Amino acid sequence: MRDYLLTLCVTAAVTYLLTGPVRKFAIATGAMPQIRARDVHREPTPRLGGIAMFFGLCAGLLVADHLQNLNSVFELSNEPRALLSGAALIWIIGVLDDKFEIDALIKLGGQMIAAGVMVMQGLTILWIPVPGVGTVSLTQWQGTLLTVALVVITINAVNFVDGLDGLAAGMVCIAAAAFFLYAYRIWFSYGIEAAAPATLFTAILMGMCLGFLPHNMHPARIFMGDSGSMLIGLVLAAAAISVTGQVDPDALKIFEGSTRQATHAALPVFIPLLLPLTIIAIPVADLVLAIVRRTWNGQSPFAADRGHLHHRLLEVGHSHSRAVLIMYFWSALIAFGVVAYSVHSASMWSVLLIVALSAVGLVLLLLPRFTPRAPRWAEGFVPPRYRRREVLPESSVPALVYEPEASEERPPVPAGVNGATAIGPRSRFPDRRKAGTRG
Image (cartoon, rainbow, N blue to C red; front, side, top):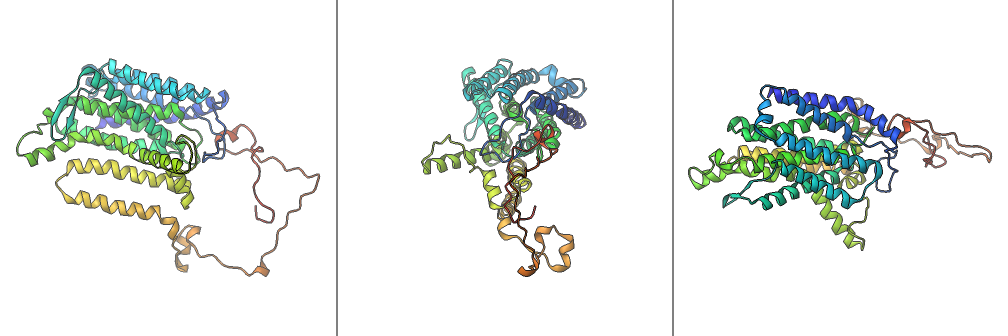
């Protein structure tokens, strides 16, 4: 565990330290897309955050290769090299897309080629556990197709959820943490060395996300772009493929004893088939709702709009940060709930706890509709939005009337510290304040 934590910290430190120079490089090269109608942010923000994340990945693999307890992963398996090859390819495609906006079909082809590169080097699904049947061995073509499909789906799911500051990196970090606990349990408790690569991949993935999040939280100073979202999606998929298709279920001795005992013991084997869904569940639900909504309104299913889940949370009344935290909560509930159920599947306490936390999540979703007001004696200890507002008589409120002169010119708004405003004024954004209101 100490070596994994060291690898995680080195990955996070390298990613964090490189994100600042990468931001300046993105601004200098003009990798800042114009604001679209469906975007939430109000300022052009540089992309290419995936550059720092990729070098963090390389640093993590390099450190792990020189650690005594993790060096065996590189000696006994070719999976780390396969991951690095596929990650380098998908990262290059993402960088080109962040700068030049390449076609979607080209990106899809690049994702399939990156998955094929990993398959050629041994990172593929060899068998899958099927409930009620047992272990099913796959042919070469079946394993290749299933591996490519899992990689492409996971990459696009992560890319789809990247809609708010810090959302994609945080959700992937939560899914990686749950995956790390599961893979480490398989490796340490059952003594199966084949689970060590997946444990290493998830530790490095957590470091990549944690190192990038301080720069990406609201208000974001840099976006990860497709170079980052596709990269972390590929690493997450590689971990799922490694622990699903490389770990032999027979080595866990799950098909011993009675049928009831074998069923409960087999649950940890089926978890890798479910854990990738923890990052895909929310995006897929958002995708289905978007298709139904657009079709019902007579629009194309591929038409862009502001009806996604994170847009809905903002419309309900949640702040940007609270909307992100709510989606963090649901991701953690699904991911860690699945892992907890795999450990104590025979206990009802885990199910009851998941149900109780789900109720808490529903209350958090409706919180803006029921904003409580603190008593007067506690107003000094709560944020202003929970304090009682004093109602002043109309006669005591001075009327402010703004009458601009014909020759008066509005001075440019000074540059801020976030996003692209660090290199120029923000005068092209109109001041939408109405006359007669306070500034």
